[in-house]
Image (cartoon, rainbow, N blue to C red; front, side, top):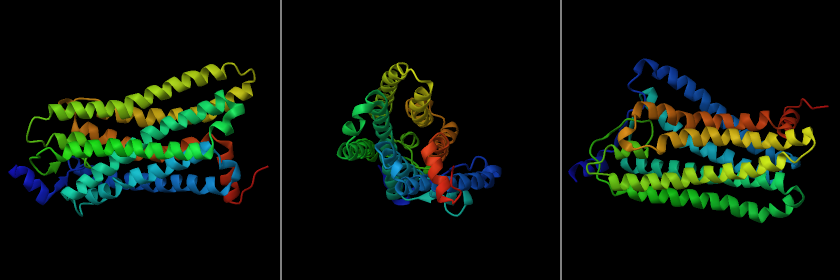
Length: 309
């Protein structure tokens, strides 16, 4: 327990990309650009959807929530990473580490559930178009959004409680934020039981939502194939395609990281995969939705004074 108490008092050193000191300046520049684009893109989505009545629909309500989540999710790790890469300060207190750990899991878990909700919205729009406004009532939309946050909160609390019960040996975390798998590698005792619990939690928050989403899209594709008009098919698949791209980007990298045994986890590889789902994916989400959506592009042109025919 002495080592654990030392970690409590001295906190941790986030090693980040210290193994590649010659690349840290390059990382700093690119990550700063990505972070700026993430803030700009997701803030634009939120602002534009509030300016145009055509975008005040259930789909954009959930897209607003996704953009807000991405803003918070990226901000929970990137500023700390930039400070660490710049060499100003690579340390984080134990309380700060646990706070970051809780926040990242909360936001990531919430996004997992929210993407399922967005799939249900697309199912209602494509498979039940005549009853869409009745099904996706504003009260139901709010309840589904709140449920997403509750799901993320339960997942985060569960795993945070688990990690705080483990005695830790050492101060150096070979990552750029306080991640579950890296913290488990500092454990002073056997963590097999904890690892099993973490795997089950990961399966629930990752595999179950993906299964529901894929099942929903099987029904959507079946309904789309019944549409005789090619224009109607393209319109139906347009918004669904955007959502599916986001799902594959986010879940693919997250499942690759968290559904593997701790002993087989590579810190070096894990850091680069984590960059993808904490920075790259939140930056790409606004582009994916705006480039494939005529209403959003139309409103953007109007905001910038260009107008459209």
